[in-house]
Image (tube, rainbow, N blue to C red; front, side):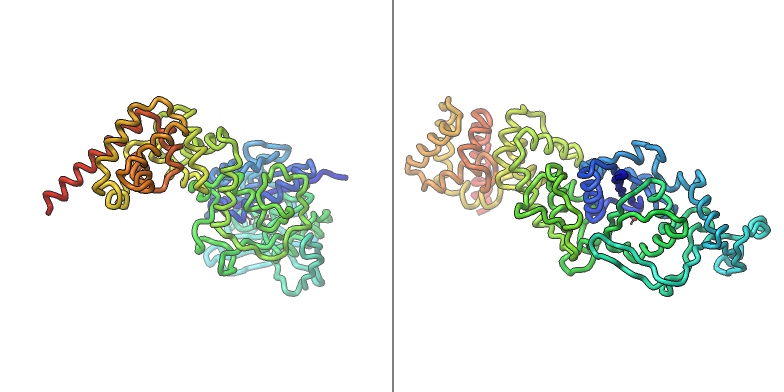
Length: 476
Ligand code: GLU
């Protein structure tokens, strides 16, 4: 059997959309499952809208997703680099277009050089005189009579009446090919065996099939995947909020979380919802992909991501966290790795993204946290708080065992002094050392912060109380 070769062919006219990432993922999965090749081709023939910045962003996003390609920009390959703009300059597309004209399957159209919409002539002979005079010339495919059929892996046999399809341009007057034409030339020359792409391309496929047939080429296996929809069941777009891979990366979704969630959008792997896509490559079966539109639910994505954050070992999660901090340019103090690992380990229990982790862990990393208003009014300014904080400073100063059991013992002793209820004592201590009322477990928090920080922070809370009390007294 000939080699299985798939491709992802983005146009660099925007950032990588999650729908594009899912298409890339399904192509990648099948290529890897079949020990085939995954090819990346940049379809940049729309010169007005394509940029190298978007291309770079798409490449970065694919790399971050872990969807590595075997041929394409950055890798080369026998026909590389795979940029349609470069292949245009190499004359690849015009060569086959001329062949199609020669065999009567395509024709030249001449447009007036001033009134560029005005058609002057259609001809099978190269209109050299017109070209010399500076008129615009395009090459169009002549749609034959009859029907065009193809078999789609998900949709079965599809048939189109050619009378519903008009002749279409293959080579534009600027010499660049159109999508429907270039895609056929490239898929053929790159020996692409399977084309998996979004359902929005179904209506393009008969045009492409006609070109394959006219050139006498084999037709790849097509599969058109239902689009990802928003909650209103219209195709997911910017109207539904941010949809780019970069966006989800920047809010702290892990690559593995995003890939897992995108795999769930269509591919039913079995009962299990949480898995490492890379470990399931061999189970991927395109014919089981759902033929229904799937709805993108950002909160489910976060939920899936949270599961991954808790499944990773702490070292791996810390690596992801550090990479994310670099990616987003967040500030981070120089801290001992063992300290950071403990923080990440306890804080991940309560969060679903790296951004939430950063926010939740903030008081462990920085001293410049604020005291929440609710903590100040309900606890810090309560009559018992001064005595409690003073006792806490005293007892923690004498504590040698900063294990979780050690800090727990002191907390319980403080609760038993009868200064305030146990709940109040614990919440006051919690707020005093973190500024917040919702944190990881109190004993664990104190144990991680350690003696010096705990004392400093209790003292700071006490001072804050004194300042606030003074302010209130002078205002009254
Ligand atoms: N450049 C096309 C797109 O981004 C590729 C479609 C295809 O896979 O054939 O939609």
